[in-house]
Each structure stands twice: as structure tokens, then as C-alpha cells.
Image (tube, rainbow, N blue to C red; front, side, top):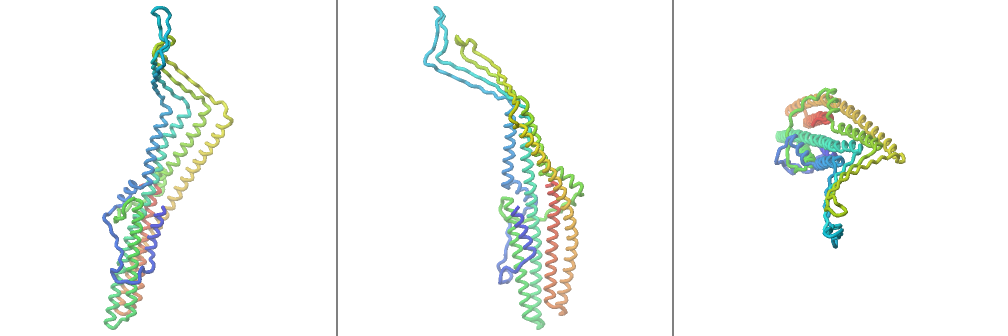
Amino acid sequence: MRSKIVALGLVMGALCGSPALGQGGGAGEGRVEILSSRALTLEQVQSEVVEKNHDLALLRERVDQARLLERKAWSLVIPTVQVLGITTRYDKEITAAFGPGQEVVIRPLNEFRAVGTASTRFDMRLFPQLENALLAEDLTGLSKANVERELRYGAAQLYFQLLAIERLIDIQERSLESQRVLLAAAEGRKEAGAGTDFEITRARTEVVKAEGAADRARLSFIEVRRALAGLMVSEADFSVTEPESRPAAAPLKEGLERAMEERPDLALSLLSLEVAENELETIYWTYAPTLQAQLSAIQQEETAFNPDALSIQLQIVAAWTLYDGGLREAQIEEARSQMRERQIEVERLQASVDTELRQAYDRLRSHEIQRATSAREVALSEQTLEQAQVGYRLGVLSQLDVINAEAALRIARIQDANTLLDYKLARLNIDRLTGER
């Protein structure tokens, strides 16, 4: 988030302009060059962000961990089966004779036993806990989707800012060319005896300013591109292309309905409420008894005192907590409070979504009006500059009139580029607020 704020500051600084970078100023001296080895579309940039961003990589691992939690939860319900093999060697064999030829073994020299057990636990608390374990994957998945949505939005913001700076670079280069034409005209007037050295110096000063402004715009492009490359975990060696125009935003009512259905953060909040309800149900089931059953089978050698080689036993244990000093009642009140807290969070988020979306539609409408106004200002400023240049050539207007007209046109074009950026970001924000990618 901080990188986006810094990048936006760089864009606004470049749009507003500041004093020239250097003291010198011939054309081509100290020029800033933008190098790129590939062109990326907005979709390609967002795909790289989703694929390589470290935050999303961590969340993907957490989704896998949540999936394993589900498997661990099932182990609480499925019976546990265990097999043991026990071998014992004694110092000697013990026998007893009950008459001629009637010797029996009481304890053999080598004894082997095989024991198998199957045990299970029946506790009604396990079922809401199991449901929460199943919800854990959904919760983590929604968290991942929400982070992905914000990263896509941040990448698109920076991408559109790069496009705006490209327009700014073009504006500054056109202004530079205009100032060079004005310098050539001043030099021509001087040679013809109609101009002064002051006019030439002033024209050269304007050329230096225009060169510095163009360089600052290129530097802003490089800085914002580096910020976007940081989100992509990639080299800052790419150029950007103008994406297709987005369709008109859906009506406000439709946008609100879509946001309530599609927003991952809202779905996450509702799911957290469901988890709290299951936690309360878990506490209620502590009032019920629990049962534990174990089936054991033992296979061993026959002896005089153990004539059965195979023995089977079933053990059932029932436990019922009748009083625990008021612990369960306190846990119930705490769980109810947590449920109310999460319900309030859901309602707050729903209200916030409604307010933010209405404000976003208002801003979009405002930027649409500003776009129309700035376009008219550019057209009038172009006409004013053309008239000033004609008047200067005819000698009825001064060089300062041309400089002022050119500055007014440059400001109008910058403002037009700025309003176009604001409009695109406002349109993009509506898609973000409604849950669209």
C-alpha cells in the first residue's frame, strides 16, 4: 500500500511540474532514457502479480495447511486401529507334571503375543468442531481471494499511472518542440533586425525548462515502473499498452447487489459468524455425556493357565460432567458475546460497502463531467496558442504572449491527462468495490 501512495505522489509531482533539473541545457544533454525489453498488457501484469507475489504465495501455503486440518479433524471421528506384537524370552521354561506323561507347560521359554485394538470416541462436540475444520479451508481461501483482489487493484492503479505519465511525457516533448520553434523564431527576428538578445535568452530559458520537465516525467515513469515491478517480483524492464475501454458501470442498485454477493471480505465476515455459531454449539454439547468404546483381541500361545489362544474383550466407558464450577456457563456467555461482535462486524461491513459504492458512483460521475470540461479547455488553449503564434509572426503580439499561451496549453493538457487518470481509477474502483476482478 505504501508503494502505491509513493507512486501516486510521483505522478502528481510530475504532473504539477517544478523548476528545471540542471543549469545547462542544450538539446540531448543529460537526457533520461526509458529502456524496455518487453511490452506487458494489464492482464499480463496482474497475472504476474498473482503468480509471483510473496503474500499470495504464503496464503496458498496456508490454504494447503487448512486442507490438512480437515483431514486431521476427521481422525477424531474415524476409529483408531492399532496392532502390537510382543515377544518375550524368559530365563527358563516352567513346566508341571501331573503324572506319568502328563507334563504341561506353565510358562514357555519364548512367549509371543499379538494384540489388536480398535477404539472410537463418541462426543457430540466433535461435530461442530469438525464443521469448523471444514470451514477453515474456505476461510483461508476467502482471505487469499481478498488479498488477490487488492493486489490486482494496486497493480492496475500503478499500470494506469504509467499510462498517464506516458501521456505527460508526450505533452512535455510537444511543449519542448514548441519552445524550440519559438527559439528559432526569436533568432530569425534578431537576424532580421526586429528582435533582441533578451528574447533569444528568454526563449532558451524556456527550452531548458521544457527539457527538465520532460526528464522529470521520464524519471517518474521509471520510479512508478519500479514500484509495479516490486509487486510483480520482476525486473523493471517493460513498457505498457493502453487496455481496451471498460464498459459503462452497471447501475448502482445492480452494483450493490453484486457487491453483497461477490465481495470476498464480506463472505469472509459471514463465514466467521458461522464459525462463532459452531463454537457456541460446541459448548452446549459439553452438557451431554461422552462415550468411548474399545475392542481388543489378544492372540498368544496356549498354556496350562491360559488354554484359550485367542481372547476378545469390549470396553465401553461413559463420562458425564454434571457440574464444573460454572465454567460452561461462563464459556457460553463469552461465545454469545463473540457472536454478537461478529454480527456487528458483518453489519458494519455491509454498511461500509453500501456507503463506499455510492461515493464511488458519485466520484465517477464527477470525473465524467471534469473530462468533458478539460477537453474543451484543451481545444480552446490550442486555438489561443495558434492565434498567438500568428500574431507574433505578424508583430502584433509579443514573445511573452506566445510563451504564456504555450504554458496555458501545456497546463490544460496536463489537467486533461490528470482527469483521464482520475476517471479510469474511479471506474476501476467500482469494479473493485463490487467484487469484480
